[in-house]
Amino acid sequence: MAQARTKTPLDDRRLALDELLRGLVAAKLCSRSQAKQIRARVGERPDAGKHPLVLIAEQGLVSASEPHEPLDLERLTRWLADRVSLPYLRIDPLKIDVAAVTAVIKQSYATRFGILPVAVRGDCVTVATAEPFVNEWERELTRSLKLRFKRVIANPLTVTRYLTEFYAVSRSINGARERRATAPASPGTNLEQLVELGRVGEPDANDQHVVRIVDWLLQYAFDQRASDIHLEPRREQSNIRFRIDGVLHLVHRIPSPVLAATISRIKSLGRMDVIERRRPQDGRVKTKTPQGKEIELRLSTMPTAFGEKLVMRIFDPEVLVKTFPELGFSADEQAIWQRMVSQPYGMLIVTGPTGSGKTTTLYSALKHLARPELNVCTIEDPIEQVDPQLNQMHVQHNIGLDFATGVRTLLRQDPDIIMIGEIRDAETADAAVQAALTGHLVLSTLHTNDAPSTVTRLLDLGVEPYLIRSALLGVAAQRLIRTLCPHCKKPGSISADEWRALVAPLDRPVPPIGYLASGCDECSHTGYYGRIGIYELLPMTDELRRMVQANTEAGALRDQALAEGMHPLRVSGAAKVAAGLTTIAEILDVVQG
Image 1 (cartoon, rainbow, N blue to C red):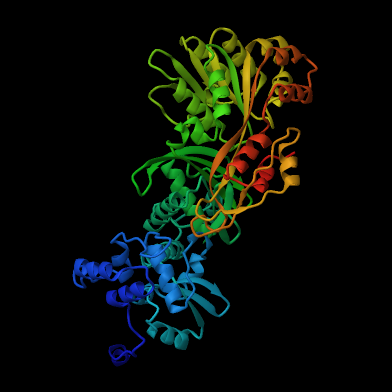
Image 2 (tube, rainbow, N blue to C red):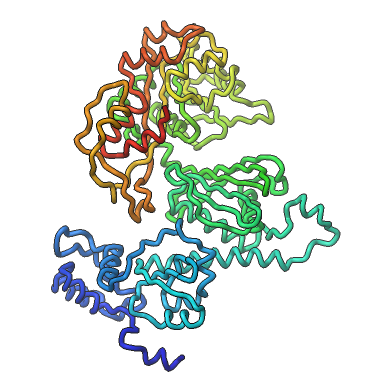
């Protein structure tokens, strides 16, 4: 074997810088003078360990021919794939079964040849590489493993990165499982006690393998722009799922005992009771992204049939302080919203389902309102973000400090503006209304489907109609919609019938052009990248106040609001469609009815 590697066939070789530069010149992506400058600047010695594609990409070149796009590493990798007639693959870790691919080839062997298995289907293994002419590994593996191999070309830096990450997490999972399998039970501990503690077959939460799994999990979630991490126990193989742009993705399957140890490790970081698994718990963890940005995680556990389930909600402080246009407000919507929040007293309510961005809107409003001469106080459950401009209080039900009690306390603190995290019951609603009527601006949230329904919801909670007429300044209903990926969205036509159904009962002209979701490597082939808000703003006018009676129906309020110019959520969404930010299908999927 050693002699065979020394005398490799002519085609069994690694790529060279000169070879690639000649190919780029022939393809008119690089001029001869540019190639000469790169040779002189880079040479072969200073960065001998780097892949030649990386060396070329580091020069920051722009294609010599139309459309003069940057010759970054991904563009160069695509060009190489076309040149050698192999498929190009941008590695998406969300779509790779790490346990399956790392079981095929040992890490030392894969690292030696710079190859990364990315898919296993039957007896066929797809292998990513940036060295298309190195064939020794395929001959040896075909002979020894009796498998077929399909090559794809991938970014050399990505191959190197995931070679390390995939095998590290797989090694940690296997190590954690094996460590517990060989560990003896503590003297005097019977089976019933082990079952009660949930420790049968479970690794130690402080084991270094488990610590590495948690570190990988968090960094992986930050890298994938996840807003929530779900750790879901199952009978044998448990699930790890990320919510990205509002949609859950299965990212890994992990042995259930290892998942239980992982959850215990996270609970320990969140100062939760690690032993207690029969009742729900909440906790918080502060950590940092690979870029050094501080992130807070809100933890929530729940007992299930197969063990304890954990959800981590990721809070990015920068998201909570966006400007109104960044949130998705149009110029008209921003003017209406700012007019409402600029009132000296009264009550403003933001409404929508869980996860629709209500807290972000409220925090952005508070940042807009907070000034040194104002006392801005909040009562929250929990405090989403600690802000030096705000006086924030945390609900603690175990000592009797709920929202209603908190509001009464805040009223004795000489406040100018009060933010109540959520109106959940009649007592809190009454306290909020009384605060608004006694000269304070009160902002809060409520769960209703649209803005007019907020009035009937307050009536259902027992708030007297005359108090609503006096206190309520307005309502903002909102949703979050996915925005089209800017890298791959395609122009297309908009169906006139679909458009009219979307904007009904209003009449809006059909946009001359719309955009469709396509799907590319940047957006993990979903066609969408990021989310933005759509809004339904209802300022309380004199006529709407007169309509608020004990038997008022939301439909009548809605008809009057539409007559006065209120734009429904669908119309706000239609404006995003006309601007090329999203699709009609996305709006209809989010805004039901």
